[in-house]
Image 1 (spheres, rainbow over the protein chains, first blue to last red):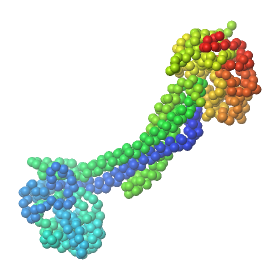
Image 2 (image 1 turned 45 degrees about the vertical axis):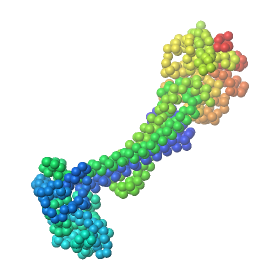
Image 3 (image 1 turned 60 degrees about the horizontal axis):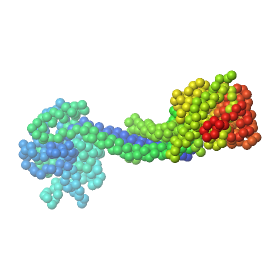
Image 4 (image 1 turned 90 degrees about the vertical axis):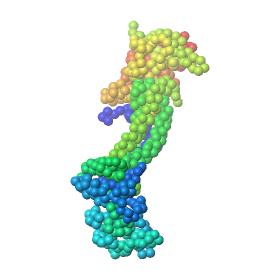
Length: 412
Length: 223
């Protein structure tokens, strides 16, 4: 301020005179700003980290048999297979993708990337004395080599060798050379396979979830479950992300010409769904946090009304010696603004600290904390906090400026 | 013959109250010339303070006209009346009415800042304080740290800072002991000698003796 503003000085002195009261009112704003900013930052960090994780698989499409109604759900288990070894590939009502369909897909995809088939089944397994359930995948031997990374050991070559996911390996204490019996002995024969490799952790993914799975060759799979020429899923790996929509449309146009046969899913849709869900959640929680600002607003309103009531006589004096109404208005707006800005600044500093802790605790990483999309919530919450203060100060200030000078002078 | 600075034409003031209207002034007409020192006397409730508030533009007459320096205040809005209070009228109250959050110096400077939109760099505030007998040491104090006499001196300095045409005093010695009252009255008399127009409400005949003319108000009328 270049020129010393006596109206501002009066506001500042009034705040200082009622220091405790003003601090308590500002504290409300601090809490509100911290709540909004840290929840906003948490949401932003969650979204950013999920997006980062998901974009790793953004170049993938999964094609699953159309199951009517809902569609679009992940189909990792493949529990729908009842027909064993029937080999009727022309039966389109079945819950599988047949060879003809796969060839169509392969033809379409050829220009853009590669397509491969996935067979999967959830089954009972036995390792030594321990039993459990796991997903058994059947993939082309070359595909296994191409898309999966073995952390230890080698890739399966024969019909009796498999690789296992790291979580499953840890849980069942599997090592290279361990033997697994697949199948329920009560319902028929079991197949014994040997672990030749343990995979790297891959995380949840919509194309393959291998962490808790046993992965073998197609021959091994059909040997156990049958289903020649039938697949649970076809995965497509696209070279250029921009082709995703084209491929998707082409596959849908070709295979779903007469009736819905397959569901094509790309991860961008999943990503959109997840991020939009996250942002809805964040907005909702932020709105709840906003209630704390509402409470703060009420407390500031109260403080401002008290300030006006206490200073009625002073307002009368100021008016009687020639202070204009807008200047009285300004004086009380300033007072609310000082409280608001002090609260917002302290709140901003506190929300950086608290937000960091919250993000670390809830998201698990602060990698994205200093990203613009995350830090933007600090000035945003500050602005909301300060604005609420100023708006709340308007009515008391207006009331003060409209006091009748004579009435005001009579007040004790 | 000096020109009239204040003219009242049949001024009425009625306060509407739930228990019935109260007539505070019922048709007051009077003229006060430039440089006059007029005392307004009358028993409590006679309407003398109401009369002063009309002249001071703190209040508006219910009917009748009030001319200040030839201008009819009836035609002015709140902003204009406030400007008039700032520049043309100095008010001295019984209860001093200093602003508690400001120092003595700032209290005097306040109307100056309001009028000129800048701090006083002419030394006027300091001169006025010296004139009313407030030294620099005292001028940094808040009103609550000063005696009644000192506060009233500061209030006089404040009333004079924008060099108003009219000085209105509402029982200026009402809250002071006799010795201090004498000092304050001497300051006011000195201002009058220098040509300032003074209108003073009082119920003390000794104080009224300082004035050139005494107007007595009874039941809202000039007696």
